[in-house]
Image (tube, rainbow over all chains, first blue to last red; front, side):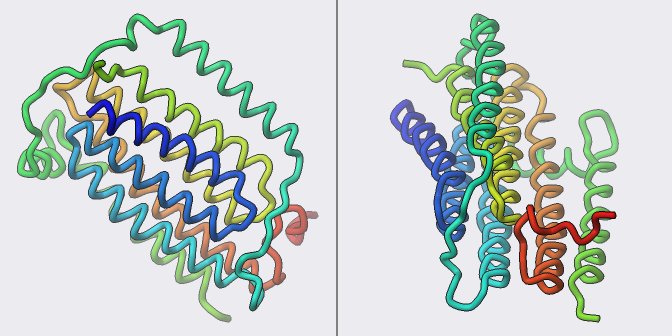
Length: 166
Length: 103
């Protein structure tokens, strides 16, 4: 478990740095895919198998494919590996380091509360998850579930309206 | 060695900072969207990890991440539709040059 954690943490760090520093946008999308896979492994380590499966199916299977298609659609023929330039790199590094400093200081100052081991819990089965998702009582998520379905419908209609040819 | 809560927050923090850096420095709109996904993803990790370590009896963080993933997918699909439409109109998706709507 410890070795797996070290590998996953290193993968997250290295691939997310590569995602924002890669010179070609297709490579950037590929590194994003690896970062998302490493995140899915974190979810599996937290015993949330369904969330890890959703992460792989929706992010790695849906969003990254969408990214690759749109990269190929928006680059001129023969320029799919177009080089990316960066602007205001100093400002970017400054802001990222400032964010890291502030949040890192918060983490260090709350160190004693954050150094807790993972508690043992019972298995959260798919049956329980489905029942919680569709229940209206306390701890149920019926309303957000329906709201998300309406949001996805609006997104489908919006996508068709925005992208159709006139 | 036991894996503590703090150890999960460090890669997540670095992922978020990478997202901030990419969001500010990239010029291609799709690359900016990719950086946005990095930030959203690091927040999802935090929700799940806090849920699992500090409140193991509830599952609020897991459900929040679940809905956040669904909303992120919808948002990405719409943003990509807009970007492709913009590319069709101007043959360019550089954020510095997309000033057609500017008054």
